[in-house]
Image (cartoon, rainbow, N blue to C red; front, side, top):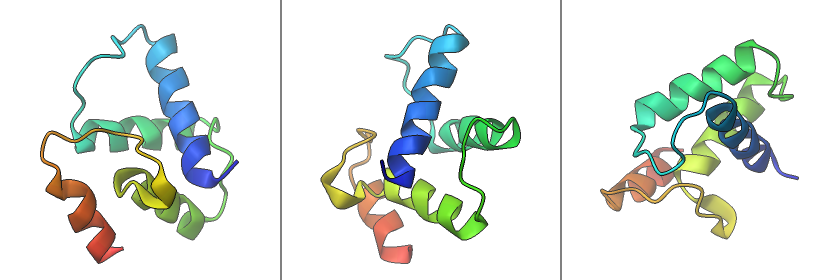
Length: 84
């Protein structure tokens, strides 16, 4: 399992445990805050900060053919990929 997969798994577990509607439209900032909370509480087992940052970029940029999120603004993935 790649690190972006681990992060997405923890994200989905978090919203399920918190009772958040999985159909909710999250902002990029909300997703980042949830993932940061997962990292701080130890549920994300990615210790190297560079690996963690790469994993977040991989999720948002839909790298490796995985579409973790469907952005309303389709250019977001492209823009994040360009700067990673």
